[in-house]
Length: 203
Image 1 (cartoon, one colour):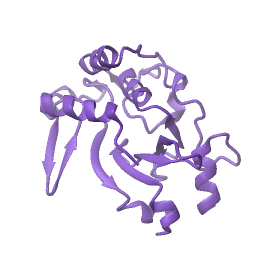
Image 2: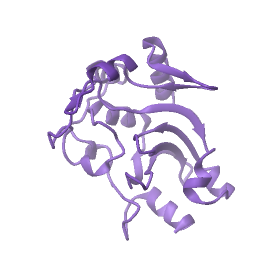
Image 3: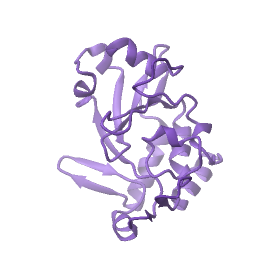
């Protein structure tokens, strides 16, 4: 399992802008300043785009999620981000064919999204640049951000521009352009490879 070059570039961008906080023995990276988040937050919205926290978590807490310490499971996953305030996570996953994908593990207490978020690391950054409040709510990916109008999040224009220019890509309007098979824990059947792998190992 390797850290993709696109993520190395992301972490350099985070460090350069000072978008991080140091907690105990680790550093947590974010996509905008803590001050912006605190000053812009209201009951109806905020600025800053997608709220996500990057940290080197590895497999330390996966035994709670899977209710297992089976090395066949633990050695195939590396958690690298918190995707939702309710505890959902994103991880690198080694698929059966040896390819490395980015997957989502819903907390179960809130989000139940359980699927491949992106086959390509740059596509994952494009997903973040779209501007959803959090990427743990896969059911929202079929519509643009702020479709409900209940809580409006102003996009992170600086991050979106950096992704677009650095990797010479466009930023899609909807998450469904990147996340092809939005699967959930409670689904009886799903076409998603990661959902099937999890179901095979833990039912």
